Image 1 (cartoon, helix red, strand yellow):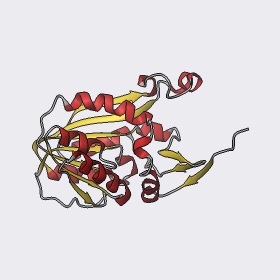
Image 2 (cartoon, helix red, strand yellow):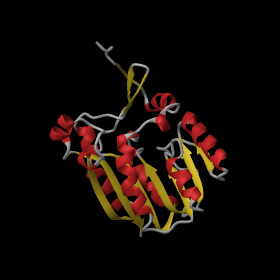
Image 3 (cartoon, one colour):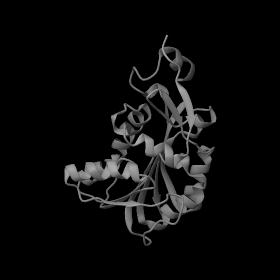
Length: 231
């Protein structure tokens, strides 16, 4: 009989500090679902100066730098940033990585960027309205905001941001936002929603979840993708 997995609740800071060592080695179903949609959206907009908020291990910072954009990337986890910096150094990409809290005033002047990416991050941020107000402030008029997140419906089902290491399942805190919380925060801060996509579990390739689980949950939304533009 296999040993049971012990569940441990951790803060966002501690969770990502632990997760940093294995994050890029995991076949993360949420990332697989998210990236297929985001990669298509990125072909539909132009950008030169990009801010990646909640960059983590640098998924989008690295990708967009490879395409020739000037990238500034920030995160509140020094451990995740260390992984991202190492990856950028290996690829000789000149990305400006900065350590900063995500729910405070961003350390940038207004109207500095023409694209802001915030991927799988806002589910951990209590005050969406303030955070998105900061996103709008640093975007240039006409600039785009691309948000992806663990779908708020998923969180309402009791699903959590989690990862497993050495027989321990670590559970991170998720905020109980709603889909309308995101859309209202965009509108309130002068951002026009161009795309709002709810991606269900059943859109994943075969093999990420059991057939039994998908029969019961396949139509449930797993990822939220929003593309907005500053008026």
